Image 1 (cartoon, rainbow, N blue to C red):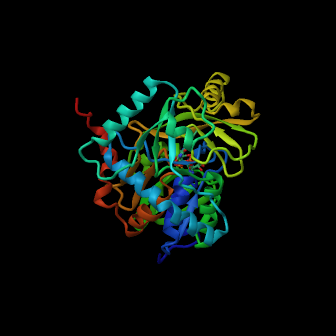
Image 2: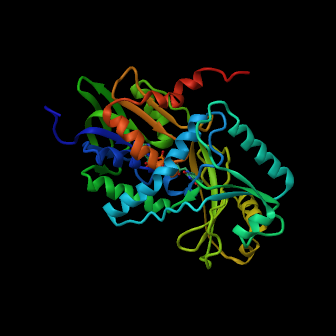
Image 3: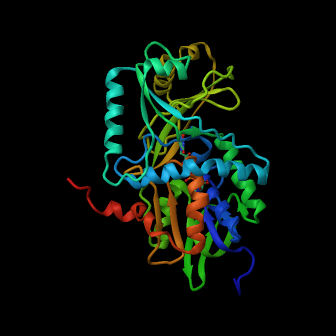
Length: 377
Ligand SMILES: Cc1cc2nc3c(=O)[nH]c(=O)nc-3n(C[C@H](O)[C@H](O)[C@H](O)COP(=O)(O)OP(=O)(O)OC[C@H]3O[C@@H](n4cnc5c(N)ncnc54)[C@H](O)[C@@H]3O)c2cc1C
């Protein structure tokens, strides 16, 4: 930018979690000059506490566009994993062997099947999610360690998982490889639109950028009004348990149980409305452990080595928000609750749109104006 000095950039990305990092990497690999301003580890960071599924099977009831977006990201994910590995040496351990949700009684299976039928029967569904109802007999062949309480399940060939901490690390290394600058400890306090872009005041000083991308997770709620947008996001708590490392027994991720590349088993994850309280509670953890042990009885003999709670970034309808400010052109808002799943879409589809300066019309379903109208009664 002519006339700018110091920390000047084509794009300032506010927030260095999975959403900001995937977007920043996508912009930097296209040659844009990017500065990432991140509050750092003191903030609530969903990106460091998640379950790491790349999950498709249940996405999009109420918004078919979200099903297509999620499927597209899942399809782009192996390319993302390959490119990041080539570029940074970090293996994000992405695998897409297909995933399951399991039911522990007939009523639970029926509810799940009914939900999937409604999802598939939506008039605007443009993609197949490939889901299949799998009876106990077939399940036992694919998941040999299931317990006697499992009555059936749903399989989706597009479900997978990764190591989300390695993903975050790889995106950070990758964006820096492409020349992006990461500034930690820089909580943004004010965004001032100016004639040639935006002046951003933060704890580390001031940054000027031609365009600004708000990717601050729950922090977007405070930042969005500064650029004439609204980000109605709230925290939703999820608790997770991790066992000691076990011999490989579970090739496919299950929505609440997955064996990591290191052998430990993650059990999760609750969905609780607890405001900003990110403490763990033994009641919820016991319920998670009990269900997981009924699904896979061998877990009853495993030691739990860790537990934590983290806060999801949740919109009212659970779908992402992608928005361009009409009042301050060049300001964008990006937020979602499935930042692992959508990392590839953010890097390969969304970032090129931002680089070109406008969101494509086919992302209109994700605009925040949808919250201004009541759903049809
Ligand atoms: C328990 C749990 C399980 C999950 N499981 C999955 C899963 O299986 N699959 C999946 O796809 N997703 C999952 N997620 C969601 C995923 O972790 C999030 O979608 C993703 O981390 C959101 O990333 P984010 O970058 O928007 O937010 P965050 O990770 O919260 O990052 C926001 C960043 O913005 C910064 N920030 C905030 N305010 C400011 C400010 N004013 N100035 C500068 N920086 C600021 C913070 O420091 C932080 O680094 C899960 C989440 C949780 C909590």
